[in-house]
Length: 405
Image 1: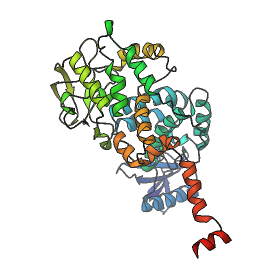
Image 2: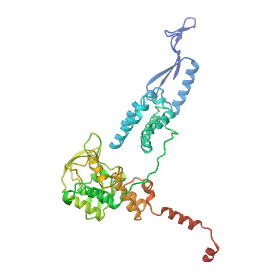
Image 3: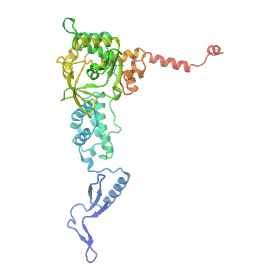
Image 4: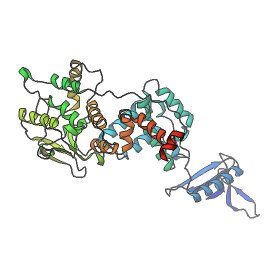
């Protein structure tokens, strides 16, 4: 770096006097030249030499410590940086779709035009308060997590000097009790899908199969005939059926590596699968297989569950089938397919299964997720805690001492 006087030439006159430059008396006088961390030559102008020297010294120190932030880098808008950040993320297709929509609908209209360097903590807190008017606390926390990740990346890349997403107050999320259907309600929903004259309906087996295995909707729809072992009574979860906007359904990897699992198949579950396969014999369908994202292929698959047209299941059409069925079964509005998974989990819990057993059966990443989701369903947890503490901490009495002696 160097501080140059733009009003005078470097050389001197015959008498040793300083020679004015063509810029003498016009514009800022002092220039600091430097090379940014990408190797690009840059400069910054100042009116006073003291300011130029101070900035030069500070910048030298920041560069030496590896914390220099180019002031021009922060001029990029939130929207421009957000799109660049989003394009570089290794998100699953469904997550990428949610991130794109969250930024487009909730972030860019509010702060998208601001330069990154001008976004302060108060800007983010104001945005949070604004979004509380249109988003549920749980949804807001998800959208905020995308925004916070974006600004964290900007701080690491030294696009900005300070991450504004620090010390942000978010609305509390009220814990709501899970709605877990009863066995009667599972069968009531299944019966709604029955065919005419008591024949097996195309979708009739799905509620029972889901409740008996705990599979996610995409996992159930992605099952092929080879994944259901009737002899050993187990179901192998190796893939899922994915549905994203603008694409036909395709086979994809499971939600997480832990989601690849083997689930024990009960007699009830086996009967549900068997009755469905007997009523609707397996036919091969052409589908894109992206279970190995690096080597996508198109192949024939023996999917167990297809729609009424004989094609892979699709959520867009499914909603027109599911919502009326839920109402006819007398289930609460908003009852989702995932509630059948909750049924499976709570049956295991009430039967004495450990957290680890339930975690493995559900394919959760960690036991913490399982415990946080179903903590209220482990029976007698409060009484067990009370009994353990009472036994360990009770003060000895004359009677107990005599009994010991």
